[in-house]
Amino acid sequence: MTNPNPADPAIPPSRTGKSRVEKLAPGSALVIGLLMGSTFLVLLNEMLLGVALPTLITDLDITPSSGQWLTTGYLLTLAVLIPATGFVMRRFHMRTIFLTALTLFIIGTAIAAAAPGFEVLLAGRIVQAAGTAVFVPLLMTTAMRLVPEARRGSIMALVTAVPAIAPALGPAVSGLVLSFLPWRWLFILILPLAVIALVLGALKLKNITTPEHATLDVLSLLLSAIGFGALVFGLSSIGESASGHAPVSPAIPIVIGILGVAAFAFRQSFLRRRNRDPFLDMRVFQTKLFAVPLLIMLFIALNGFGILLILPLILTGSLGLGTLAIGLFLVPGGAAIALVSAIGGRIYDRFGPRPLVIPGGIIWTATIWFLSTLDQNTSVWLYLVAYLVMSASQAMMWAPLTTVALSSLRAELYPYGSAAFTTAQQLAGAAGGAVLVSAYTIGANAAHAGALTVAQTVEAGQAAFTTAGLVAFAAVIGTLFVTRPRTPAISTGATADGRP
Image (cartoon, rainbow, N blue to C red):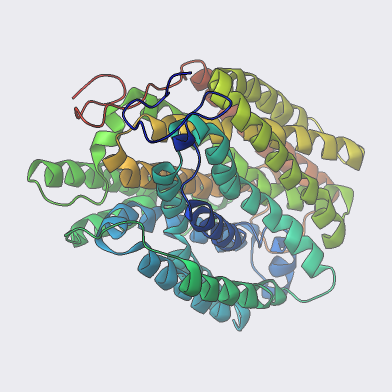
């Protein structure tokens, strides 16, 4: 038997004919595992208040459109800050980034736990998000650097399952906690876990990168905040505008947001041409195999996060489920995502992304359209089956699309690619919360504070799921253009599709 890695004759072949270079290096599993666990913990908070929204609407006397900002504001902060993580990962040691970000997350959690009202609670959520922003890009970039090509599908399936499972389990955990404790305990219970993760990181995490000289472009950060902030604010105002309660026409912030995002993109290209440090290296978008999965993920994340916001409202208002029942209802969704992700990783390694993303997209879209037809007379078990099928089919697309996108890039572009991909997901998630809650509000004319009637909830839910169905159809069209990337030619400087 010949050596499968002739460049390194010291490495003997394994019994399967694969080189041992395909195994994780010593210590790599510990680094990836610690990052996965910590990322899971911080991302659990993204959708933690979804189930709690009916309680918070009553306790804090706010509207559904105002209450959704506890989640939308969290996601928006991530979308604003994540573009900067490419710079952060170049400039600082991985261990320093991890400890600083987790400390900031702990501070935000403490603020939210002690919040006397809505405004301080929102502030705590934003501080939490500021600490969370770096974790997903850091996890993805580290995994892409440490995992051999032949095992990338399997390992990346687990890595990318974390951003999918954690938000999915957030509402479930929230429902279980709220069944026995006040909403503040959603944050109080997180604190000791975060402190344990911080201690473990301080003791076990080692640096695997060398910091580079990089400068912070303040204008890019400002344009990012204006563009993404105004865009999501405008989207979130659509529902209130339809009822005549919006402080300003949604068209104004939406236009400002589009112009701000365009200016941000132009600024990054300008910095690149001047050999300065961009927040986000725009060369990642020149690769078709990166851009197409990114576009599809915009639609998937928009629906994924938005549905997790409105589903507890529908289950409460139309079926009369309590917080404990909703928590139990949502738990199997996380298990379905984990199982499908594990199986899907093996399929990706052997057959590529198409056998996963195309059928996954079709099933996902059909399930969402089915949910738009349900009402108060529908059995909760039928809701549950539809939710499980929707979660599983979404997982069939999430991990393969992420792996395709990042695998199409050269290694030096991994930090920017992971930052761009995660930014798009979080921005779409923020927009999804805004769009589907707005559709929910318009469907029931529910801009007033307080609970809806059963009839209003049914109409609101059907309007929201119909909107989600239209978004899902766009994702299905995109999956037809996804192909497996070739290994990027790092040494020649060529991209995955052959361009320099």
